[in-house]
Image (cartoon, rainbow, N blue to C red):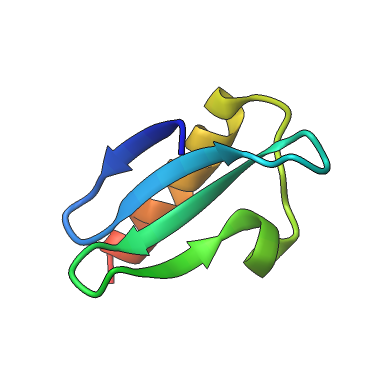
Length: 67
C-alpha cells in the first residue's frame, strides 16, 4: 500500500496494481482486520494516479464513517 488515511472507524489506502498498471483504493476495518470495500473488486474502478485514487477512497470512506 502506498498512502493511507485514517477515519474514525476505517482506514483507506491506495495500491498500484500490476495489471492493469493503475491505482485502486481499499478501505479496511482495523478492529476486525478485514477489507470493507475495494474500488477494483467492488466497483470495478481504477485510477491513473495515487492522488486520484486517494481522493475517491476518501470520499467513499466519508460515506462509511457517516453510518
